[in-house]
Length: 161
Image 1 (cartoon, one colour):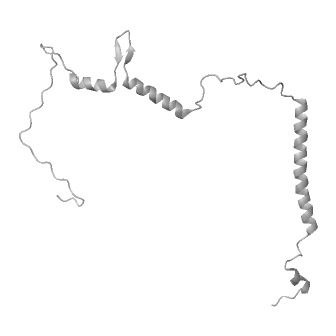
Image 2 (cartoon, one colour):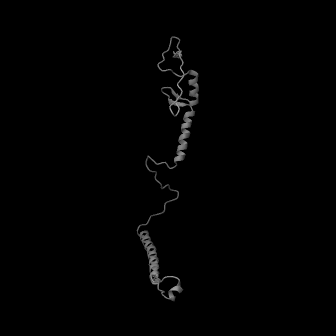
């Protein structure tokens, strides 16, 4: 079914004007602009009201430390730097000499030195008792078994040997 021709006036404009009202478009734009202006002026009025009724007092001196430190425990403000300092302190303890308990005569030695001393003296044996010579009895190695049997070969994926 062919559409009826609405006339030459519609074909010359190039757009549809049946649903468009220019007056309403301008009224909407004026309303948006009016709301923005009203919001700015209202905010300025409220700001000036509070400035007059609630003064802030004299400005703080730049030489005065006005910041109060909160009570303990405080949050870390520079965690990576704190971790670096902690690790440096721990490394200093591991690699240095110091007293653990001076009353009892307990000292701390570096880990490398402690390992060297253990290698020189030998590791302590559990349950060892001193012999007449003052040396600890060391357990003797067990006699090796006479019959050596080869370990069975591992089974492959199909279960065959």
